[in-house]
Amino acid sequence: MPELKLVTRDFERAKQEDIRTYEAGGGYTMLARALRDFTPETLVAFVKDAGLRGRGGAGFPTGLKWSFVAKNTGKPIYLLCNADESEPGTCKDRELIDKDPHLVIEGCLIAAYAIGAATCYIYARGEFASGAELLETCLAEAKQRGFVGRGILGSKFDCEIHVYRGGGAYICGEETALIESLEGKRGMPRVKPPFPAVVGLYGCPTVVNNVETLATLPRLLEMGVAAFKALGTEKSPGTKIMSVSGHVRRPGNYEVRMGTPLLELINDLAGGVPAGRKLKAVIPGGSSVPVLPADKCNCNVDFESLASAGSMLGSGGCIVMDESTDMVWSTVRLLKFYEHESCGKCTPCREGTGWLARIFDRILEGGGKPNDIELILDICSNIEGNTVCPLGDAAVWPIQSSIRHFKSEWDDAVAGRRRVAAPPWSFAGQEAGVGA
Image 1 (cartoon, rainbow, N blue to C red):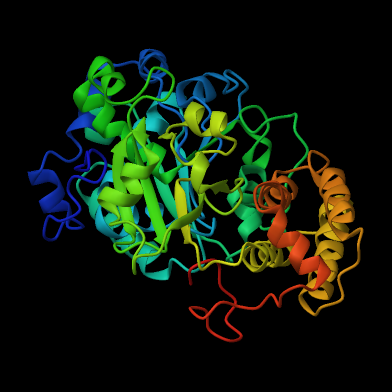
Image 2: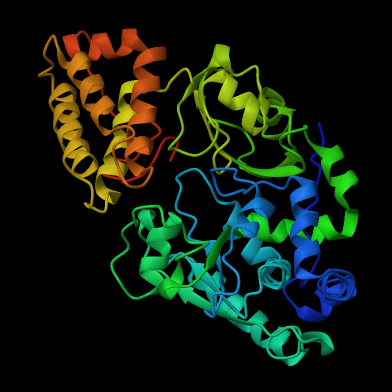
C-alpha cells in the first residue's frame, strides 16, 4: 500500500528549507490566494466546509474552533502554533519543521488571516533546538520577501511571527498550560471555561493549532474542499501523518488517507513485526491512549474507527509491540512517565500517579497483594475525569486497557508467579518508552 503524500510531499526535495526552493515549488502562492480570494469570514467557512480536524490529539474541527474567536473586543487576537510535541511515540511535527519549515509558516499566516491575528507565536518544544533555529532563519527570509510583517503582499494584512522555546514539559502540550508558559508562568493548565478563544494569551482571544493542522492549510486551499474530503472518511477527511515505532522493520512517519486499515499501515508501510514474532498489542495514537490487543487491530486509522475499537487516533503515535513484550512492565514504564510529568496542580493526578507508582514498584519487586488489581483500578477511576487537563486520563487509560486485555499477565505479576523485568531490548537505567 503506497503512502498518500499531501502534507509531506516535498520532504525529499533538496534544500526545501530554502525559501527560493519553497517558492519555486509553489510556496506562499496559497497565502496570496487566501488574501486575494477570501475574506477572513469566507476562509473560516471554507475550512469548516472541508471538515479539517485538529491533528494534535483531540480532533476538534479547525474551522469551528476559529469561529469561536471573540470579535470586536478591542483586544488583539493571537494565534499560537503548538510545536510542543511531547507525546511519547510521536515525531511528526518535528519532521515537518525540519523538512518543510516554510509550509508551517505559510499555514500560520493563512490561519492568522482567517482569525484576524496580527501576532503569532510558534511554541517550540525545548528539545527542538535545531528546529527552532531553522524556523527563525526561515522567518527572517519570509519577512525579507514580504510574507511576514506589515502589509503582507501589498494587502492590509499585518502579521508578525515569533518563535518561543519551551522548557521541555509534557504538560505544555495542553493549550492552556502552553499559554501560561508563554506568559512566563509555570506551565500549568487553566480551568475552562473561559476557553482560549475568549480569554487566552494575556487575557485576549487566542487560537491554538497543532503544527500538522496548520501545515495542512496550504494544501487544502490548493486542492479545494471536495478533493480534500474525498481523501478520507465522511467524518475524518484528509490525510494523517502516523509516527510508527516499536517492533516494526521500518519505523518512521507515514502519511496515509484517513480510513486506512491500521494493519496495512503496520504491515505494508512499516514492514510488519520483525524476527518472525507475532503482533501482540498496539498503542495507536500516542502513549496516552488505550492499548489495543492484536485481535482488536482490525480497524481503520481515523477518529471514529479507533474510538469504536476502544482507543483513540490521538496524535498518531503508533507504538507496536510484539509477543516478547511484557505488558505489565511496559504499562509501568508509561505510568512512570506520567507521574514524572504531572504538573502537580490537581490532587488526583499528583497524588494518584505517585500512589500507583509505589504499588507498581512493590509488585515488580515481588510484593504483590491479592487486592492490588482492584486497588489499582479504584485509584484509576478516582483520577479519570477528575483533573483540570487530560493528563490524569492519559496516565490511567493505558493501565485500565492493559489490565482489561491482558489480565492474566497482571494476575501472574501480582501473585509472583513470574518475575517482571525489563525485556532484553531495553537498556538498563534508560528512561525511555516502549520499544526504546
